[in-house]
Length: 317
Image 1 (cartoon, rainbow, N blue to C red):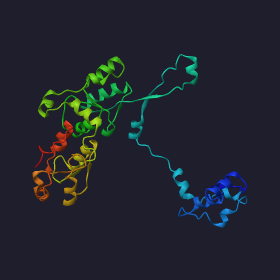
Image 2: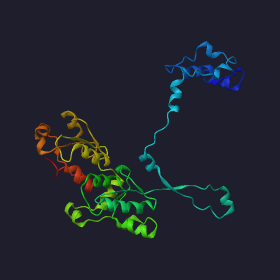
Image 3: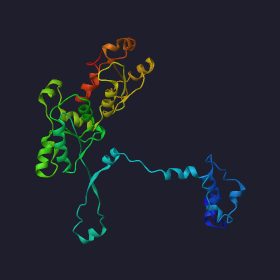
Image 4: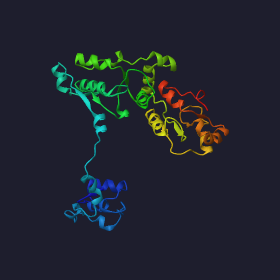
């Protein structure tokens, strides 16, 4: 406890003695702030002298405390992505009609996130036209896929943008959502404009809306680790982006055989290490597979994200 004045008869001091709490002067706090080690012995006699540091106790040597003040001199850098992520619409509900209730009530803010939209599969001119219409409705156009809430597309594809957005978006809609919203002058309910591609959905035996809702409830690769060999297609950088959007993590190097065996002894698909390889990297993965560790092709990620399922048998090499 730090005080300018010390009265042995005061209630606080009596209680401090009773509880074995040391009373120190303000000088101790000053020296602690200026200490290089962050440790000052509070039992030193100089800190038991009270009343003589009324003026000096508050004086801090700026040269010694420079480390404390330096962060305050540097401006905080805020990226455009952070600004986009924090943008909200504010709605102020009307106050209750009853005078007695209104007197006690506070006017609270309710927040509705602005749609953050990206496009895939459109020409530059069409994208520009759709962008202008969305901006007139106060929606935002983003290029950072992890910030995107709405993907606009004409059909299902397995591009990196589409697969990332299946994991990170709340909606995948057709451009008709934008056209109808623009005509009405307000953003319409997205549930009436979900993208449906019967050919792709029948081919891969899934529904796009179902996959997006699954990903929203729980990331597919949550707590999963991946090791990707050199010649896998698509390249490691692309696979990493898709995996991370789905909640997984890509290791920079292959773990030891013992670690792989330990991780893959778990029955749940989560908390495992997935080794992803290809026929061109057979020399790399054969020694791993001989130890009974499963090795998968890239489809465990590509088709897995599209369908939001982890098939641990179908995609083995």
